[in-house]
Length: 252
Image (tube, rainbow, N blue to C red; front, side, top):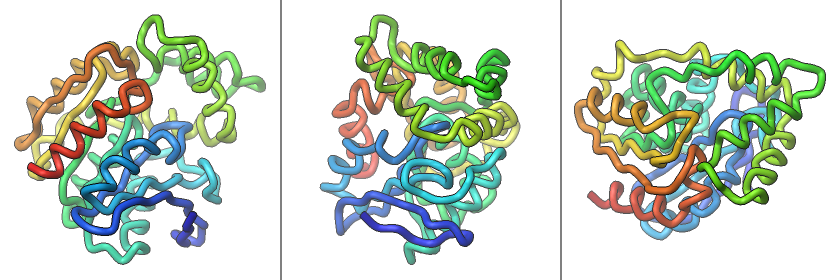
């Protein structure tokens, strides 16, 4: 698996596909490129796909960031390190915030937007922020994991979500959620003119469908796609449905 150096930091990425549109998948708070494994493989049949680990996450070095603009600048530098002039950005949750910010502030770098389980504002419940900053963040991990999947999701899926969060250093995850809580571009999204796919699960309790509807209504060239019986981690709960929607979007 390859690495590139970005801002003096080794950044890990997984990739698939050698022809077609250039696509970069950006994971959410406390996550990693692993969350996009199925989509990289599937969409890689029609596109050049890359999913990166943000600094401090997964196999990448660094210590993470506490603002969306910092992460956006890293993603732009990552695009440059790949030798690509631009790419379609597909972001989940915090990754969607990074995608929106990049489209607003580095529009020449963004060909299209895939906005998965995200919003123009990402307020975080104070209990989550307090829990992540506590000496033992495990209860906060469990709270997040329970809300990240649809009601009635299998226990093993929730436990896997807890393990994923625990794999990222707690200060990094805390910084991610602080970045989300500070994010608000509701007064700016109308300036994004690129084509966008806004996708969310109908049972998403962290970024409910109304967040997606808000984006789809205000982005000038957006289409809305709701995935039934799926929660916030729609790409893990309904991976093939998400892959199909993204593939169709890229082919349109």
